[in-house]
Length: 85
View (cartoon, helix red, strand yellow):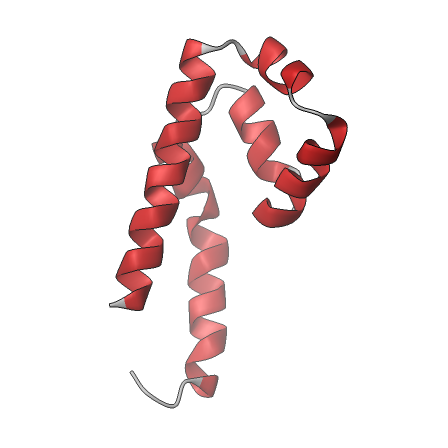
């Protein structure tokens, strides 16, 4: 239940960023954001990769696909630590 909630929330956020990028060219998008907010965005995203993918023009589906190998590896690693399924 919680995993579904966070997955839906993540997908909503990623789709929102894609729509924002389409409506506002990326060259102007990051100039409008204060430097500190960009640092915080990168920290929340786990690094600058998401920002770079958005700027390069990747759509939300391609971004999700690019993260799949890492997520699959993480899910496999965490299996031995799960108490409940």
